[in-house]
Length: 259
Image 1: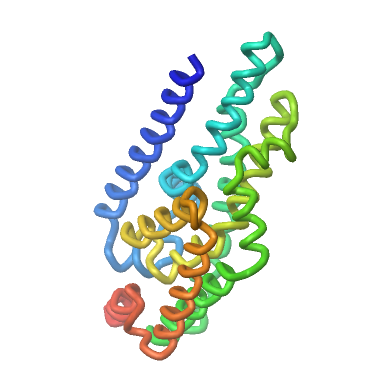
Image 2 (image 1 turned 90 degrees about the vertical axis):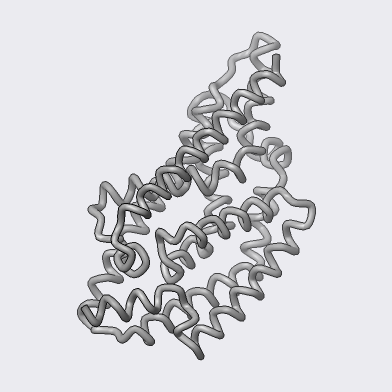
């Protein structure tokens, strides 16, 4: 019975992620190329940006979060089998998604502020690209930081998280989801920030970040993968500082400024 339940939950998580990817591809094809590659808010209202952001998080984070979600379900299923009070796994997932909802609000505020500042200052395409390069280098440096190591260690050990962070009841499940979401955020927030210079609706960049996050959290040498990716981001960011044309958003920025 437990195996069947786990398979159903896993199938639902995969289906949700697949549906989210399909929506993102559809959204990308329906947007102006320059807008989706250059504008941090992609010309969206706050509500629409948040909706797209949550779809992105489902697409990008559900695969990596699946081991923790399944472990939570296993424990709750055991409590149910013993006749004890149990909590639906989706309560934990709701707490987890609250973190990414709040992050989306902050992301929109930062994106809108960056747009206003860029419009006021009048940055050249090369300067904007070099700022993007600096963000890529910051993401790379964070991949090599002790804080990244700490958060990644928490995300890579579902059983360890359960043993050290367990809370009973529905409120406890929400708190656990929030806590695990914060650790995931601690692992990935600068990788998501790097999507802005790469193109916030750049499907290839999103897919690369998704694969990286999944590999960091689930592969045997996840910590080493994080370090290698950090070095790669540092080198790529440095290259963009010297050759701003190396950033995929550079041509789109230049074209929009000429129109």
